[in-house]
Image 1 (tube, one colour):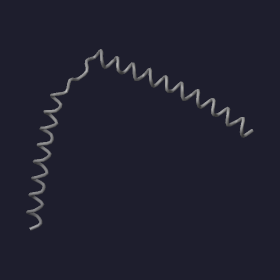
Image 2 (cartoon, one colour; image 1 turned 30 degrees about the vertical axis):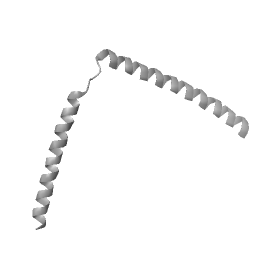
Image 3 (cartoon, one colour; image 1 turned 90 degrees about the vertical axis):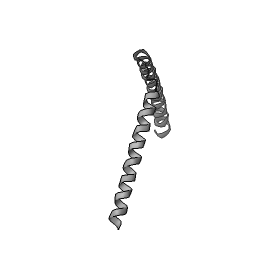
Image 4 (cartoon, one colour; image 1 turned 135 degrees about the horizontal axis):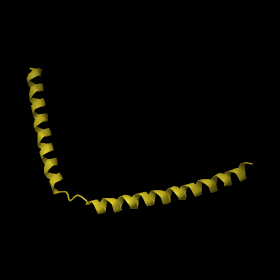
Length: 73
């Protein structure tokens, strides 16, 4: 009896998975993908922001390190 119930559950899961994948495929067709120029521009913005944050955190780290040295020593 358990084997029959297990077979039905597997079939139901497989059907749900197929339906899900069909819906994903339909949704992916609706997406407007960015062009090459937009992708490059976005990448440049991200790299510049990362560099700015990196410099900022480096400066804060140096200041805090020197402050801690003054307090401890």
